[in-house]
Length: 240
Image (cartoon, rainbow, N blue to C red; front, side):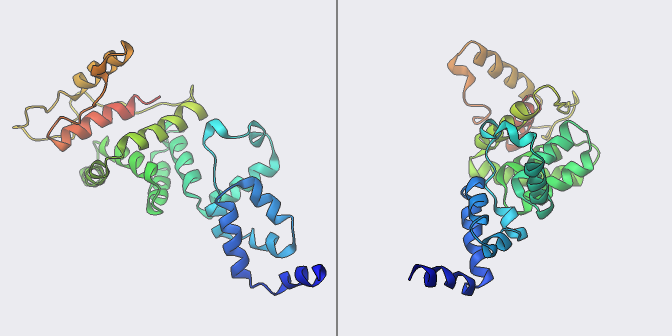
């Protein structure tokens, strides 16, 4: 009876195996490896690009140290990158932008990760576009993305994700861009808060060092959304 049951595995369609493998991969890399060792059908299903795009990647602080030294692990993650894994694209984009200083490559990767719905990549892409001074169209695109993020009220979560990647993965190598003194997202001469966001950020930062309640709130009370974007740019470039 048991032998007949296991022999039926051979008749399960490959697309069902792929669906099962995606579910397992999205829960745990370890479980994916265990599944692939059970039979040839599971091993073959585990080779699909969609499986490599669906793998659950642990946060940096929870990543096993030996993964960095294992050739097998490196080949696996390289395969995930080639398949277009959103989280790995996001992390590699930050490396290209703020360590290797390859802006075009980094932006391309952020756009790819953002197109899959990766929220933190959308935040990093938004900030990177807003800080540009050489392309007004890109800056306007960044402002449109910022409006979407601001409406979703999830900016704090995305900042935390970027902070985690930058400070845990490469704490001493990160070179964040600098904001030129006269550069502001807000361009309205009638805006009463235009140009004051660096001062507000410094006040919040000093308050945080004193554990003061005045450290909280960010620029949420500022009515001008472009000034709020300027404040968040200050936060972004001072993340590490």
